[in-house]
Amino acid sequence: MVYTETLDVFVRVPGIATSKKGAQDFVQRLVMQTVFDALERQARNALLPDGVISTILNQLTVSIIYEPLHCKNVILSRTEKFDLEPPHCLISNNKVVGSCSERSIVAKRCVKFVQVPNEHLSFSGTLLTTNIVMANWSREMWQSVVDRALQMLISGPYGSNFLRATSTVNGN
Image (cartoon, rainbow, N blue to C red; front, side, top):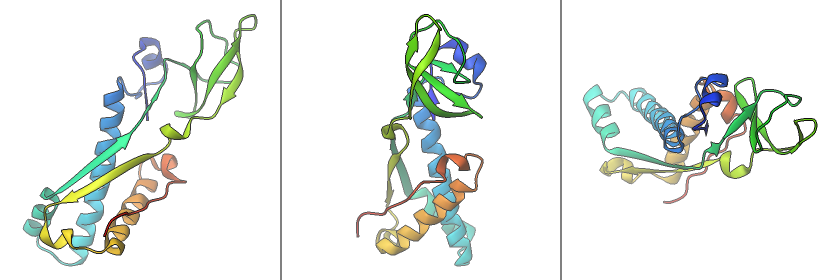
């Protein structure tokens, strides 16, 4: 997820977040809902009643730490001419594939593209529960929930952004 405060970018790339907090909130909601869906599916497979499932989900908190990429400006092809100074995010098929870090003043084109830095390609999260049963789950049990959530992210509408994702559960 990326964000910008530049009006021209909103016009050229509809759906881009309008602030850093907006991008972070989007990722937070997406991951939280997916974890809830994975837990709900597991609870339904265990034949738990709806009321119990609702109580379990209400006792879970998901917190995500993520540093979205700030795109002051965008270019939609490697050969696009532009007047503004870099950095510019290079967007292809509605996905940021790199950024222009240097341009030719004469040709008004990008002469140096770089990949999106890793800090913008990953996030970490914490799951906290006040449910006594879930609080005592093994690391393996939580890993199965997180793995299921990751598979759901991969098969969801933003799946291409998670194709190389991995998950790790730390703790007991």
